Image 1 (cartoon, rainbow over the protein chains, first blue to last red):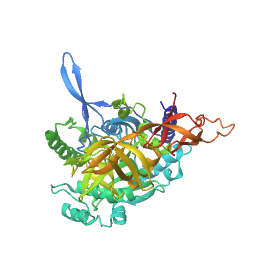
Image 2 (image 1 turned 60 degrees about the horizontal axis):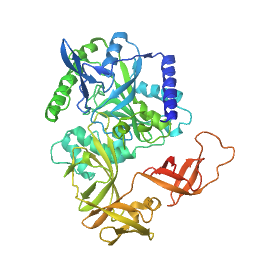
Image 3 (image 1 turned 60 degrees about the vertical axis):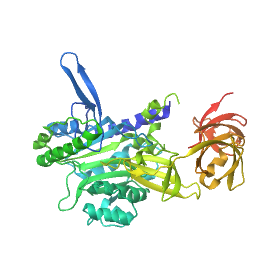
Length: 329
Length: 187
């Protein structure tokens, strides 16, 4: 067992808790076992069975993120909150940067937008980084829009490649082989992004990629008059570290997201037999009275891996699933 | 045909008519996106490296390969020379594709070699191997900091960072993928 890993995890967590406390955030603790989830078709879920001897049984789910509960607390308290939460993603392949169970740091800042969250995250990292963290993992962050990155590294104009056909043409010109079966704009975008853009992203300092395409459905607000969302992702050392939204507050938009994404999820999983989690149809009602806020979800194990100069999160997740499954090797 | 998600380290694929071996595989889930797999493929014939990121549901053309036991004889700087233990036939594998294996394989030992239509594609080296320390630096006196390390060289010429208590002639277990010291082996 790597005692050093235990000590480093504890130190970083304590430093972050101190920072959040002095900055006025309230720490919350929400369930990891839930009766309902937010519909996210690309995240496969874990389900388990609650058994009651006298009242029958029902399916429960392990949360892929604490968002579903944290937003309820924000609606109720109108306060900035944070949480270190265990999160569970099924089908997640086990690798150097993935484990089906991982620790997420999620923080919501009331009254802030996505741009404010960049500064907040810079300060959080600057004030809490473990000693010995290399400079290229520390703020200031470099900021670039996704469209700028596409232009710079894949030499195409994202503003105009807005249809499935136009983007497919870009992909083919770049030399990608795309299956003849129809695929969504988002899928083709990810092929281009992962093959040509992401590997080239600068690593001399942390990078915030802003303005994600609107076609990638999520609960981040849309940028007015432009085909993007008020969402950013933080990369450090070439690794995706955090995801931020200017949280959608329009009840109708959230309701529509719920209906559409749940239908998509249910139709995709009807064939595969995968878990179709229950959703809370009343969730959009929260947004009757929801303060402007920006939320960041940060992969804590990855941050720790980077700051301690390790190559895999498996070195820092004690009893990680990969080791447990390989037991006897 | 196999799904890209099934490709593993060591899987042999045919790409534009040329055989490639997967040497690295990492799964990626782009933020809010479906699953992809990042592959690093190597052509054993030319040493050419190919990087490709595919959706795990994409099809890939795999090829049927055969593993045979081969005794490692020596290398001449360009090729590894093996003898197939069943037929005593000698074969050459270009070193270009497996440059660091010269410091890992031990002469006289038997390894599994992967063939595709009589062409050697891959050499299978165990991930954990016991080596003898052939040369060890003297530990610096007074260097008692926990976790202090020094360099040693194994009998195969592999340079490994080890804790300072390791001496010449001792046996150590090494991860051959990361070239990292695991533990001292007591006889």
